[in-house]
Image 1 (spheres, rainbow, N blue to C red):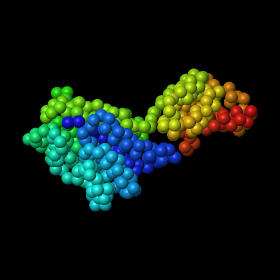
Image 2 (cartoon, rainbow, N blue to C red):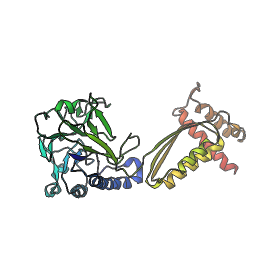
Image 3 (tube, rainbow, N blue to C red):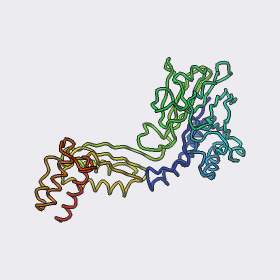
Image 4 (cartoon, rainbow, N blue to C red):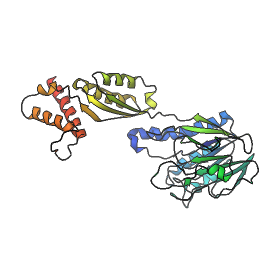
Length: 375
């Protein structure tokens, strides 16, 4: 048996966290879905399993539902889909759309009941509500079934941190249920969970296209090949994501380091398909203030999306000569006071809202204004 395991497509997500780039991000999720089908064909998969959260929610535009059904139908071979906690099977859900009834090869598994496939049996665990504290795999007792036994679930594997249990899946769920492989959805990074004997029988494929900054290993699908009942599955990750979401954290201490960081950013490949989260901390020399502005311009002009967090930058304590060059009076006094407030160790009274971060930004803005005035 050879099949493709995917899930968490989140079609219809708003992507408001990346502003105007959200349109491209939403379009790319459909493009990635087509790449999933291409990967399945290229790798010789006999069928596909989609383990929940195909859609962002049950309120998505019904045109998107038709588009997804058409994409899945384009595989030609069997496709098995379970509802997840974002798109649970309930009255008015996306799974009532007529596109699913008219498809010859796409099967939405709405009930927790064994389903025969070529070479074995699927044990689907469809979600019927947004949240649940129950193990979705608890009903499975697959040991007596003939052929290769594959579970499809959507939930949180034991040990993954969350504030409240949400469809909890025990770490030994596959072995306990007598499954050869348990395909899971819900979390967006690819992750595998070997059994006590080292055999890999449970995994998250992760989302097919990265959804946000910080996802550890997303934008993949898994190709799963099982020689026979009880055999150890061979699991291979295949890249389907089209957008890059790097997070770059840099600490600067010396003059010129920001310029070198800018050169690194300029050398990144394919900026038009890159969303960049840049976080800069450390000490900023006055003469490097222009480099910070230059970085902001490069991110805004070249990248699909870019943002800079410079709230942890502090003016260099060895570089206050520009303050001495300010006109005597209120301007120089303001700069001196901001210098004091920008120091986290400042023990004196602070005006309301004058955190070190706010004072630092104000001091840097004051330097920029002073430089422009001098020019």
